[in-house]
Figure (cartoon, rainbow, N blue to C red):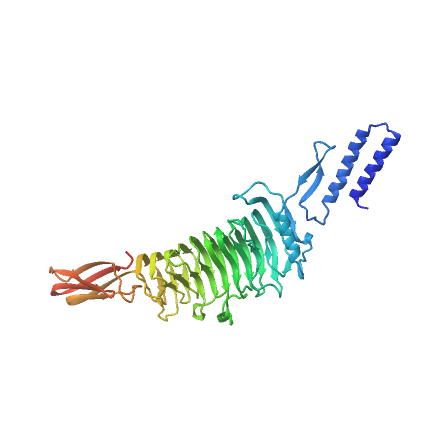
Length: 481
């Protein structure tokens, strides 16, 4: 017989004896003493070394020993208490899903966004275990927020669905609210997709944080963020294959490490060490900072960062490292690439879809190559030429072993004659486009001659004088004004 059952039986016997025989002390007095005794037994039972799935424990009130009160414990749900196997030998899917369900249905305190219950920082603790998962851990209810899952490894089983994600913040309901979740934190996790699907899916959620995660063996996406706002991915490592570069099977890498299909997201201090595409962006106003991509070399068909939102890019790539793999931007509009290092002949490609490039700054970067004559900025005009080119600045980049290209060029031509021609085709990015020219004419000796800018075409500038004279002509041109 358990201690709680024994205490209640004792209470009943003692009450009967007091009623039959009477006692020196009053019945109420004895009752209060027995209540205190019973509460102490219950309290000892509540701190058993085997934690209960329930996040509530009982203790007597210190201010009134005759009253039993409820003291809420921290809302921490230990998955092993639900039967999850931390050795990874047995399927832990249902156990972890039950822990997630209990956490989502647990006590809440008010709301975050309208209709999203604040769970108060409830935690699902994986306790440093390795757990075998046979189906996506999809949150069973929506409209919840302020919850963390952390501290363990999840590995897809051999029969895990190939279109699934290990952690799935989505819903299959056709009557879902605008935003499903808010302020969900996924931290300190290793997710092994076992070449059967993806790692994390976040759909129509707000302010999701993915921090200090290692995601590997995905075939679709390591992380997919679709819709919603402000998924922040920090301090994480992603790779389809576990390698440190120079992998013999690199040309066969597939999948995408991070797929951003929404607005206002941020990826900071992230390493992508194997995948066909490192990061693909098809939403607006995203920030990529401190990214190291060596996922699949451009020479093998890989892309470090692919910006796939023609005409409305609104992306900033700063302080990053493109390692043998480059950047592709379709019809870039409002794009900044700055303070980034391109190694191994990596370059930036501007791809024409509707022929628009507007508000682009590619400045203050470093490019290092192998003297193969590769341009640091390249155009893909397979679908047609760029026709609308406005406010484009490519300048102040330093280059070693590659061809410097930009929208601003300058040079000096010398000679004894009546015409001086400066060819800027080796420097300028766009063909047959010079929007502004400045030149200075320096004749030799104490002579004064008339001179004029006579022609600007095919990225060449022609200056002529009215008489033959030895002179030096300095010319500066700009394509982006």
